[in-house]
Image 1: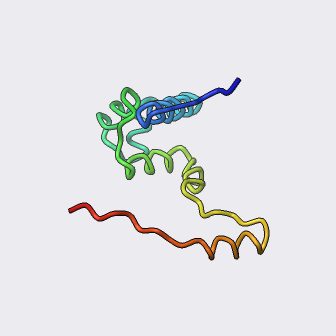
Image 2: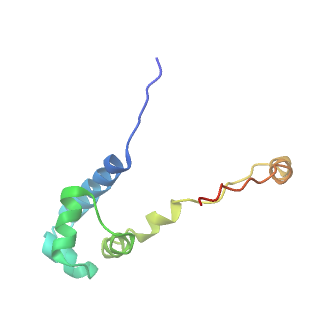
Length: 102
């Protein structure tokens, strides 16, 4: 049997918000306390925990306040090659451009 794990961006945002909340509670911080520490408006942080919606800048500030900024480094990392052949094969692939929207 094949298991499919299809998450929407909204689902992922809510999961991230839940993880941030869990870390905040581990550190025994209130929403107001973390918002102040991160330099984010309290209402912005409260909305984030409820809806998962927050700007990238504010999310990074929250990550910094939770000492978790390094976890963002794993996002969109470049492909790691195992052999020289992998590098050479990649270079032979013709790059395609996206279509321009007019």
